[in-house]
Image 1 (tube, rainbow, N blue to C red):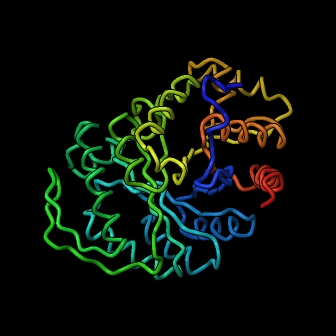
Image 2: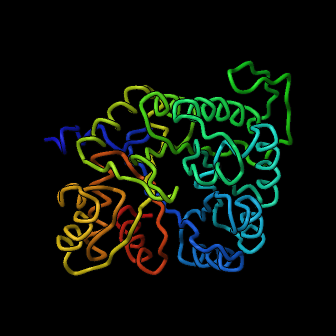
Length: 325
C-alpha cells in the first residue's frame, strides 16, 4: 500500500514508533496590540498549543514585545514567532532577547526563524535585499549560533556572515527552547533538518509586487519530493523532528470540491492539488479533520498553524479526540 508514492508505514512516527501527535498554533492577524493579546487569550481558551506572531517592518507592534504582552496575559499556552526575519537581528542580541522572553513567559517560548522575503520592507529601510541563496546562508549560520547560545553557549564562530569570539548570553528558563526554521530550497532544508527541532517547508514561489503575497508551489508531487529529500537529509533525526505547515485559509463549507475549484481558478493550480495540499483546509469539520490525518500520513506533517479560532477549533477537537489526546 502507498499514499502518493510514499510508504505510509514509515510516516509520522516518533522515535518509539508512535504516530507523532498533532500540534496546533494560532497565528495573530491583527496589527493592534490589544487585539493581539486578546487573540492569545482566545487561543489559550480554545485549547491551541501555541500562539504565534509574524515579524514585519511597518505600522505594527514588535514581534518579541507582542509575545511579552501575550505572556503576561496568558498562563499555559506556548508562545512563538512565525517567523522572525533573520536579517533584522544579530544572532547574539536575538538570543539574549529570546532567553529573556523565555523567562518572562515562564518557559513557554518557541522560536521560529526565516530568511526574509519582503523586498519592499528592505527598501523602506535602505537595506540591501540579497539574493535568496545569500539570505538562506546567513539564516543557516544564525540558526547554528542561536541554537548553541540558547543551549548555554559560549559560541566561537567563524562564518561568512558572522564572526564570534566566546559569545555568551542569558540562559533561557527551559532546558531546550524549540527552534523552527521556515524555508524553501534543497540546501536550506538540508541544513534545517540537521539543526532545527521543527522544519516548515514553505512551498512558495516568487514574492509578488506587494512584497508579501507569493506564487504558490503546492503541487502534491512537489511536496512528495520535498519531504523525501528532507527525510533523506535528516537521517536518524527524522523521528524526532516536527514538520509544520502554515494553513493559508480555513474554509468551512458543505461543498469541498467547489471551494477547491474556486481557489484553483485564482492560483493557476489544478483542483486536485488544491484539495490535497496541507496549506489549505476546505470542507466540513469532519472533512478537514480527515484531510489533516491524510496529510500527516502522507507527508509526516503533524504541526499546523491557522489564523481562525472559530473555524478551526471544532476540527482541533475532532483530531484530538481521535488521537486520544
